[in-house]
Image (cartoon, rainbow, N blue to C red; front, side, top):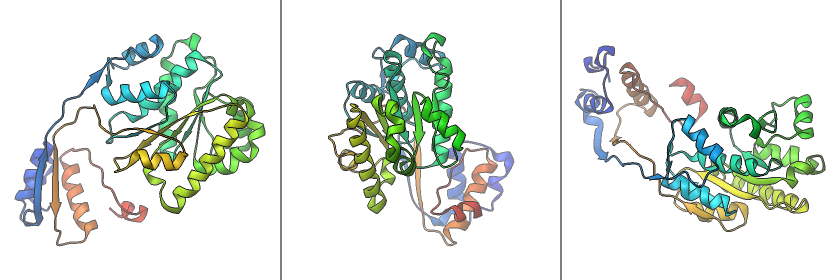
Amino acid sequence: MHSPDHTADARGSVAEYVAALKGATRFGPQVVAHRVLPAAAPEPAAVDLLAPELQQLLENLGIRHLHRHQHAAIEAILAGRNTVVATPTASGKSFIYTLPILQTYLCDPDSRALCLFPLKALAQDQLKTMEQLWRLLPERARRHPAAAAIYDGDTTDYRRRKIRELPPPVLITNPDMLHLGLLPHHAKWGHFFAGLRHVVVDEVHTYRGVFGSHVAWVLRRLKRVCALYGADPTFVLASATIGNPGEHARLLIDAPTGEITRSGAGRAARHVLLLNPLDSAATTATLMLEAAVSRGLRTIVYCQSRKMTELI
């Protein structure tokens, strides 16, 4: 969008950016459709199903209510029902599993949770989230030196041994490490599996095809090992918006799974534009990104490969 409209002096809103895009000599004719999706007001729900310690924790974070879908999911999870949540990005899915995990721990310090993430970056984010929430709990409630630990290919042998000897309330790993590092050596993890109350499977929409079949068999092995140690964990699955989350989750874990797909989180108005570009997709995305960044707009670009991401 090589136009005087997109200089750094013209910082503004998304609406202004869209108007400049449509008015630009180069890009205007390429816009073939433009729709504005209306804003949605949040649908609040009470926090009374949470322990007083967690209500105070949320208060310290400036959160005075849950969203309706969070309340429904947490209620189901605390009742021991397998649940898949397929709501849009930034709808508060992480609270849906972290709060029940912490509530269960407050009632039973021997309880444990296993969180599976397909990417290391997601695992690191979850570790930071758990550590933040852990620090906000009353000191008397923190009966373990750490809230969570990552157990993956980057974990040193020394660190792995320490984690096995004293598993934290939340163990964060990935399906590959579960398959190779935990299940074959379940005797060394007996205390952990005996106390396993929740299994979180994030980004379940990525577990499809042959890879999804492999993960499904790994989860079946996990359930058999848990049964060996007398545990019957509740599965919590998080997904991007897909057409059949309940059926997908049921096939993945081989058990009935309730689904929550309607978000109660607030949403700003959204502009949706379709372009018929004259240049390559990479060139078009680069120019549009440049125009957005020059306005100070927070921007994310989705690419089909790491190489293309680095190029853009």
